Length: 168
Image (cartoon, rainbow, N blue to C red; front, side, top):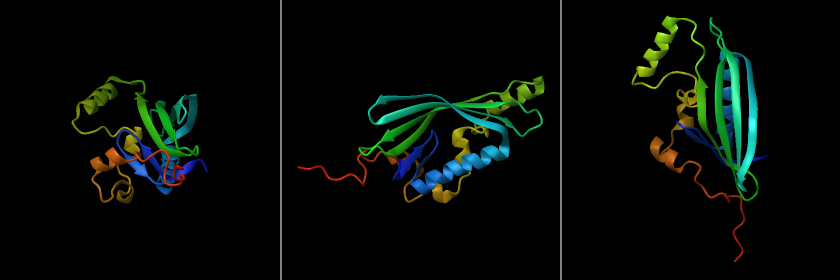
């Protein structure tokens, strides 16, 4: 297994900890992707290693929403994987995600899109953070406040709990 038990998944809105929760998130993404999109594909554009304990991957997800106008949805992003001293992933951070707007088919649809962008509330567009907006509370809440958890989530030492103590 390439993941630690205490893996932290971070996106711009959330931080989820634990391998069981990590698996649940990606199961949910696959399930909802198949439910809401047809012809869904994930393409890894580039993988690179800027540091010894860090791997980055640029990816694109494309699919056609199951709506009458069937315009293709495109999500671009970068995943950053932090590795501990044993080569196991202890943080998976998703960042730089971009939802490309579908082509506008008519002026009324264009106007509705603009109205949605002026709303003070976050858009309900399916961006990576939005997948978890209505997630079960046991995944998102604990004894700490959300802002405290986001500050501390995934900040554990890269050596992790399974690393032997340094000889000394």
